[in-house]
Length: 313
Ligand code: NAD
Ligand code: UDP
Image 1 (cartoon, rainbow, N blue to C red):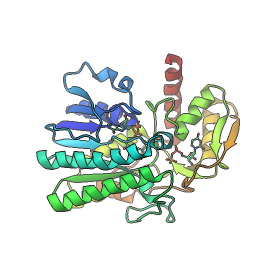
Image 2: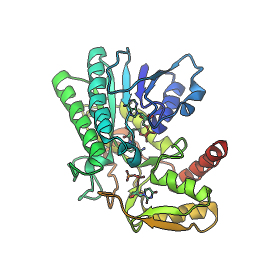
Image 3: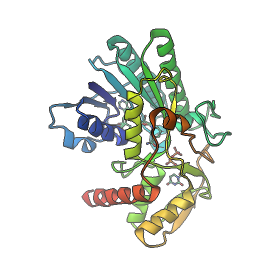
Image 4: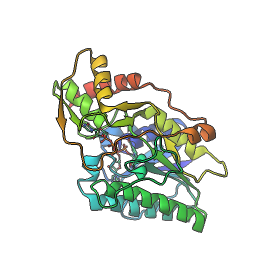
C-alpha cells in the first residue's frame, strides 16, 4: 500500500509511520511542523520507502495513495488554543481536503477524532452512542467542535460519495516522542520531576483521565484501518480503561522515581472535563483490540525517553 500520514512528524504520526514501514508499506508523511518535528522522523529520511512533505493541510494537495491516516492537528490545549482559528481550519479544511483526495483517488481514510467530542461528559464511561456535552463558545471549542465537524464531514462523504471511512475517537495517549514543551499532563509532570521542579497540578487534582501507551494506540489505529466489517464507518473509541486522577499520576511517578514529588496547584482551566473513561467494548468486539501496556510500565518507558531527550537538549 501507499499510505499518507498527515501529522506524520508528530507524536502519534511518527510512531504510525514506523509501524507502517515495518509492515512493508510505502509511507508519505505530511506535516507543517507546527507541533511536530523532523527529529521524530529523522531516522526514516534516508529510506527509499519513506517521503516527507512539508505542507499545511488547510491547502489542498494531490497525491496517489491507497490509505490516508488524517492525524494533522495540534492536540495539546496550549497549542490548539495558541491560534484557535487555525485549529478550526486545520480540522475542518484538513478533513475536507483529505476527503476530496480520498474521493478522487478512491483511498480509504481514517480520521483521528477525540474523546473531546464528548466534552465534559454527563455519561460515564463514554460509549460511542453518547452525543456529548460540549460548550460551543469556550476555549476548548476550537478543538472539540473542529473534530466534531471533521466527523460530520467523514459521514457525509461516506453517505453522499461512498468514501470508505474509519473514525477513531482517541482518548489520552502518551509515550516517547511527546515534545518536551508539549504541555499535556504526562509530559509536563515527567519533565518537571526530572528537572527537580514542582509538578503543576491544575485544580485539586481529583479530575480523571485514562492514559493509553502509544504502542497500544498505534496497534489499534492499524487494526481499525484494516477492519472490513459492514459497520466499519462507525466511530470507535480507543483508549485505556484504567481511570486515574492527576493526584494518582503524581504518586505513580513518585514510585517510579523513588522519591516523593512536590506539587503546586494552579487554577483548573475553563471547561476542563472532570471525568473521562472510554467504553471500549466496540473496539474489543470488532477488532479484538485492548491495551496491553500497564500505566506503570508505560510511564517507566516514557521517563527513560524524557531523561535522554532532556540530556540531548
Ligand atoms: P502532535 O501535536 O504531536 O501531532 C500533530 C501533528 O500535526 C504535528 O506534527 C503538527 O505539526 C501537525 N499539524 C498541525 N497542524 C497542521 C496543519 N495545518 N498542516 C499539517 N500538519 C499539521 O499530537 P498527537 O498527540 O500526535 O496527535 C495526533 C492526532 O491525534 C491529532 O489529530 C489529535 O487531535 C489526535 N488525538 C491525540 C490524542 C492524544 O492523546 N495523543 C488524543 C485524542 C486525539
Ligand atoms: N493538567 C495538570 N497539570 C498540567 C497539565 C494538565 O494537572 O501540567 C491536567 C488538566 O487540567 C487535565 C488533565 O491534566 O485535567 C489532562 O490534561 P491534558 O492537557 O493532558 O489532556 P486533556 O485535558 O486534553 O485530556
